[in-house]
Length: 243
Length: 243
Image 1 (cartoon, rainbow over the protein chains, first blue to last red):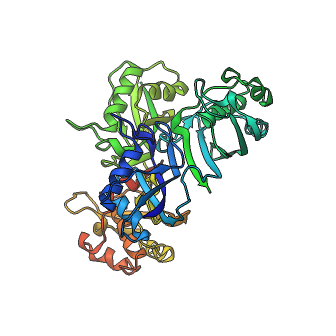
Image 2 (image 1 turned 60 degrees about the vertical axis):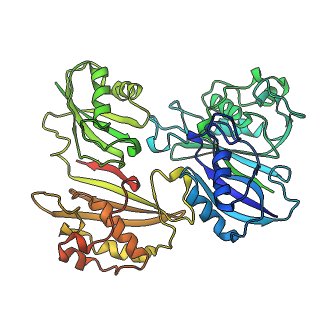
Image 3 (image 1 turned 180 degrees about the vertical axis):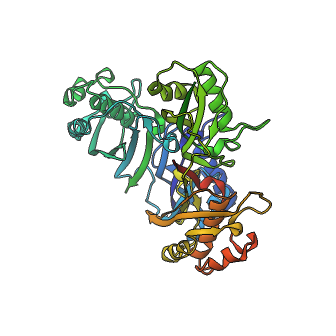
């Protein structure tokens, strides 16, 4: 058996998230169908992480164990020929047996995009949140700095989620602007449920001068009520997974 | 009556082109419906040009004559609140009575986008043609230069079209590359049917070393057979109309 690692990009618009579901079309389902066609054996993939309904990916990572004789460098072409156009495999690599798509992750990088033009940019509307009010970039950058580090991010987790620990190490939270598009890039060893979207929503409130850029107190509150709005899924992209 | 000029952007993916049609959804239909809702009077718009099924626009220009008391600067917001999300009005301006969306045009600018990455960039797939073969940028730029000027562009017109004259003044044909995206920007006093798409298809053949970059002979041939492939609609954007 070969342990094959694939890098997968997808437009989440028309999927009910990544993970297999009864009665709903998901990215995993489409990927496993294509793999079964190409590899001609039963497959069950493992992904670096799930993405929610409407969230996109450029660098999702999945592994699959197959006996296939298809040359590794042909695998992306073969899968892409079978996959719908909104899912694209951009790389295939044979990994050691002990490589695991989820457990071997060192960090993940997500990007949230805000379109700050007076009117929405129509060709980017599926991949960015339109905010027509002025956003104070410097204030957002200051606020982002107060979140970087190893913290209990309970305040930035969807209420009702259950996890072993709510401590995460946020190693990077950059806010930048180009042509009226604001991008928030977040890197951490892991993210809590809705964490990037709540950070994005909170930073937007800061940028609109509706909230202090000092977010240490939000972390300390340890309550979802203390943070801001959950920005919508379609502005979010899973950018990269590092191993 | 006010003569109102609007700048309109749209994602052409889900429309059967701009112009009104029986039994098919078009951008004009959606715009006129929204105008009737906002202005509460019958309207018939005039556009700078039609775009074909699947072609996008960032700078389509339309005019409409209405009595409306809606303040001009509120018109884009009012229309956008009524329009589907894939059509966006970005500007409204009252013009002199003799301003005509079509007859007053000085030039139009179109852009064709090619994604030259090994695998298609999934979030740009609806707005760019994926070409996986290497493209020779310099050769494409040389070829483009041989088309600039005032010529009979019969060879670059869909066969079967009928127009008064096939002479057009192509004032600009730039080819550039950034991050593996090739963009062909064309400006002329007017374009023949499918002209930009045939130019794009021909330049791609040049870039793949399948055709000489000397396109003067293609112009001289005066026959659609002499030029290249018609590149697909979804890579094309009507960028700007100049008056």
